[in-house]
Length: 207
Image (tube, rainbow, N blue to C red):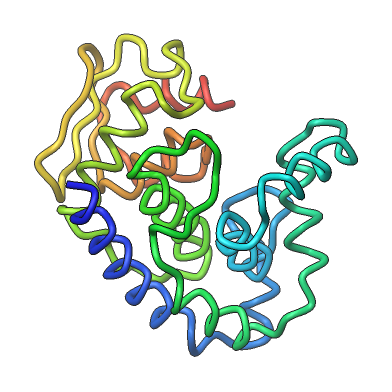
């Protein structure tokens, strides 16, 4: 199964690289779904788990006062490579080189797909995540390994309309798997792509 996840990572990686390979300079500077992050910052961040060793990570965490988001944005902003250079490196990444302590076998795929959505949404790129990749990532997000609180999903029934996947019980929230991933990852803007009598509750919780 781990090998399957590695293959899925490479497939989604290649599609994403193709999606962003022709972006203009203005598009690279456009805000992503992640507040305060430009498209270029997110692409640079995708390389962080492959290039920043554990010892260096710990040192940077201390400097960032143990605020991981601050550390990650600083790392991305300070990366001096051009967009083409970033994409060239990203295109050669392998799931087995993902270097995050305690990360499970799905971590590279989850990291890539969630952040790819941060970029595709604002740029109007409608490339969907394949159902084969979406289902395990959605299971991973709702399986307790991610920082998705039980309170966020309480009394909600989430269902993907483009993949055979569902989770929870209660008010209905339906939509593309990618929109569900983004919403559960804290991106309130993704709720606009969802329907059902539970969307207003989900939106208020993301607040």
